[in-house]
Amino acid sequence: MKKYAILAIGLCFTLSSARAQRNTQYHLLKTFTIGGEGGWDYLSADPVHRRLYIAHATQVEVYNLDGDTLDGRILNTEGVHGVAIAAEENHGFISCGKSNSVLMFDLRTLDTIQRIAVGQKPDAIVYDLYSHHVFAMNGGSNSVSVIDASDGKLIATIPLPGRPEFAATDQHGHLYVNLEDKSKNVKIDVEKNKVEMVRSVAPGESPSALAIDRGKNRLFIGCANQKMVVMDARSGKAIQSFPIGKGVDAAEFDPFLQLAFSANGEGTVTIIHEITANKFEIVQNLETQRGARTIALDPHTHDIYLVTADFGPAPPPTAEQAHPRPAILPGTFRILKYGPVNMGDQ
Image 1 (cartoon, rainbow, N blue to C red):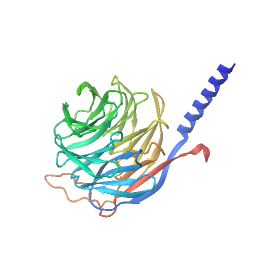
Image 2: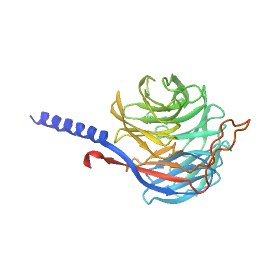
Image 3: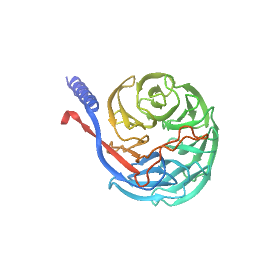
Image 4: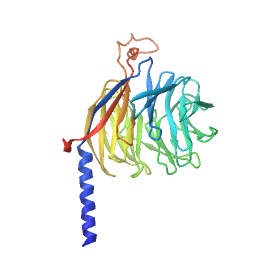
């Protein structure tokens, strides 16, 4: 009888947990104005040192996750796109697109250690705990630069059959990279530093955002045609797809709440609940603010962070730019912090 009682308790806990996840809704907790000028790109959370790194114009803003204050700035990061956190080595790595380099810094002091030459226009950048390597996606040379996280040494350059966008690692020997111009996703062996498989992201097109559930080997791929495709990371099989908002550029996955987040530049976050490895549902279309297209997750609190600014009118079209972007108003750059509430407790 004890065995069946334990099984029954476990089943009740699982069902209760699933209901809690399904009832979880996100709402705005705080807005923090950073100011300054210029555009922005990826956000990266460091849960160990409790910091959020924000790629902003020619610098990286360093935000304190516990104090909701600005800890400092890392300068001289022209064309900055992203930050990889190598917590085991106490090193951070910043992709600097305009200088074709990666800046290595100390996570504790924020001091620059060295600058590493990589491929052309490095964009997304991620750390892999399995190999202890950092991978920089070179959008201008269709390649991945592989860096040793301990000493910053350039180990290898992996050629790709297309232009890389965001990437994710399963921490078990594989790196997954979106190829935006080919509507493909590639699977890379991080021991051999070699492309193992190229897969279509159909029905998605022009994939940019990418998040991973490492426990179930599921990729969440945000695409320009307003679809998020859930893919089996190992086989490349598309399992399910969902409508999302316009202008997706980044995604996150919370393994505790089993929620995937798609940050859409139109001013929404599409939140998808993973019920099982093969069953998913949209549980919320969170209204954020226009321009909030990148996102970071604090795995300790389950809060999510986005950034945006106010916009002025777009400049008139030119021969070089037929569809120019609207002007970003100086001094309005800000962080948006959203947190979960279980609606069943209300």
